[in-house]
Image (cartoon, rainbow, N blue to C red; front, side, top):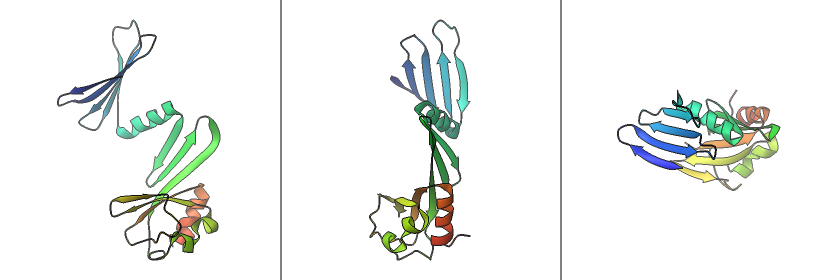
Length: 160
């Protein structure tokens, strides 16, 4: 892979396949991404311009991890395990849980979701231990099935 800085344009990443096909991805300073494909022997490349969200989706297809993003929810599905869908949800803590530990709330036992991270004052707490006490302003990241996440929001966080 070759990486080139393009002054006032962005950064270009180039890959050449063993067959001689070339792929170039340019991250533009505007935030958009251009994708160029030049097949071996062709005179002109095919090109498309993608938003960052579209580029993430293409990337997830290429890696086999499909991402579907809707507001604060992400669903991940894997091409190798077609029946596996993992839902990840971000939500702010509410007055119902402030000052309580993850263990005291028994979120996993009551709803089936697992708290996988907490964002607190710009810092990330990954895999928070059960004794972690939730604070005002925290954002929690939970993982589970869609219905489990809804149950968590409804029963634990007081969201209807």
